[in-house]
Figure 1 (tube, helix red, strand yellow):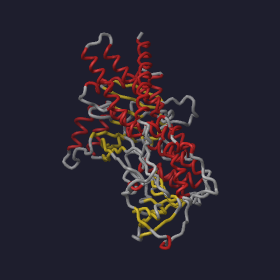
Figure 2: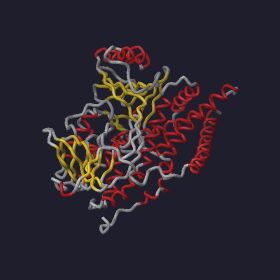
Figure 3: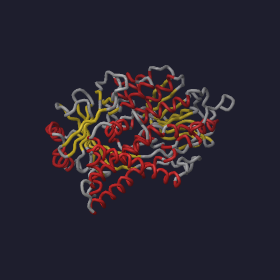
Figure 4: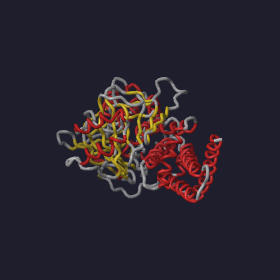
Length: 525
């Protein structure tokens, strides 16, 4: 009987979604991305052709050699492009995020020929997640049955992974990696012609190419002229590395639904476990006066699995922790002749779900396929018009992962609101049901099934499941009111995220004219 009720709840959620969908379509038919570049506020410098000190010695300039920049350099270089990469610091990065690659991201890594970059860096296979809440736990496995045995998630030191990709890119004779700090884009008659940068000696240099791709990360100082950045900082991560301990479920990411917000654990090597403590807001407790250490030991430690508590407290006592803000920014580009944004400079989401690298690698695959038929990139206006299709073609994957990250963070965070508490509890219990109830959401999380419609159906199935638990066996006015607020709260979580992503491009990309752009013929390029 209970199973029949659950199925009824799911079907009811689907019907409700269809009705909502019809309303959205009638009331939101506008195009999300502007056709023109709008006002440009970032650093661009106007130039004249006769003042150039360098010729075009590259087809593409890439600013930044992080995950996106290094992977893109190798991909375009392998296709025969002359690529010049300018990176602020070519030493091995040391970051506390970008350490977990979902299976969908690993598939993209294979598609780009970069799968060997997770070898020889002590990367750990990841086969799913374990959720913990109020003493209960459940294990969620990735649906990998139909894939090659090598396909799984990977977790590793971010810097080791990036260095492997840089090394592989630099082995190509037509790829040049150079250390320098790019200060501005060079513009001529509305077209980006290259970049102005400073090398280690302090000398200011110019580099020119028909296409400049900006991949300078979440703190990008160049994005302002290429998009409309709306950066939000919902929380901060406190990062620690635990040693000499075991995870409750090895080869799984661990998510603790703690108060006030989630805590993550996953292996980054055979001897180290990364812990990320989410702290809501834009600031963490003071490190200097001991407030952060006290917070971690008195508020966080009692909520984590017992197997990890001693190692956690020992790491806090050593003072071995770092902090960083968690940034979220929907993609809102200004199509600009001669330039393109990619990676975290272009689009960010909360790192809770570990989807950032999957989105970046997927974007690279889309761009590579668009550029492959083109032999000449010099007609900047024609190329810009053609590459508008990039923003639409990337949407199904990117918007699914972005929406899931934003929605799950809000659902998994504690709230004094009773309806939000019920939603959180319903989400944990819904995923614990197993079968289609867990496989669907986990396939979205893993990047193996990036379908926006599937995401929305499961999200509202959780909400309806929560309402059903409130009303059974005997409804009351109070429970009915909480149920109504639960549905309203769920709508208030996911609809603004969908709106920011763009309803039309997210669900109906084929209705966007740019979707059908064809490669320019040689006579028009």
